[in-house]
Image (tube, rainbow, N blue to C red):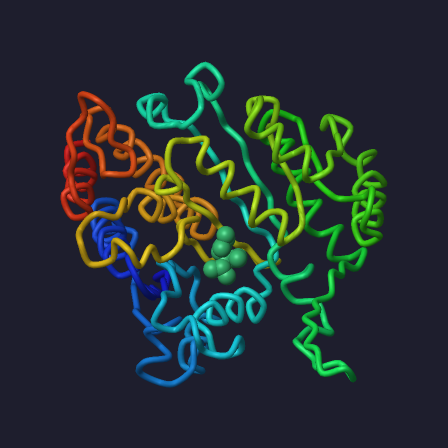
Length: 360
Ligand code: IPM
Ligand code: MG
């Protein structure tokens, strides 16, 4: 049976970086006879422009039956003034919640070739390899009630609800404990249990599961301290597990430790192992259409897709190896440029990875 991959380029730099990642997928599919089939659909602002909604029914239907989804990015200033429910971001959030993609894996790995591109001293980040496990379909992003209401005195008040059930905490914790088992055996759960009851429960539930994973060393950290420790001594972390909003924030910080958010892939998985794969960075409207964006996060997302959803480990390894090769060859997009390296654009970077793949 052939694997169906739904490709959702989206907005901003999305189409450019996804085009490069799709060429890579086509190349490995052919080289290794994987017989992958790809379909493209609309999401985000691009979907709003042509259908009026950020997540068209047709896109959602295709997403539900696909074996895996590759997404570029959504959003941009053009749609920033729309009401919340009609904004491009709702396309992405709608996919996450409709498909139950609760487990978000965001690895932050420093490629030794990029140590000089990090804003931290290279000895602080050399060898960095962190996995952030972010809960993706709950917490304050989805909690009800939410909205902006007008009080009796005429003043408006905005409100959201930060909410997690035990079952939601347990299933994301399981993903994180298992990841820690496969990796360095350390799990740090990040919360704000000194202030927020929802995270008191979070801490309690995760603590109660520790006995099932005796080989994993569990620790807990408040989110403000975690932000500081990520910048101060990031190598103390192996796996971090946290809720939706803290994970959003900490994963951007962790990304920057590696030199550029342009290098970081991500996987969002549901209980059936179906997944959506996307770069951690956004749509970067300021550089869209200029052949400046770094396609490597999306190309590495394709490697994760092959590894986690389709079980093509050899193909995933080959892509990761090819990315390593182009970094060894000193090719750099603007975001990871440093002295003595060669600046290339989005297309040339994609082409360099293709060449590295072909020469294996
Ligand atoms: C991310 C992004 C999204 C999020 C936005 C685009 C809705 O920042 O994937 O980290 O907040 O989850
Ligand atoms: Mg984010």
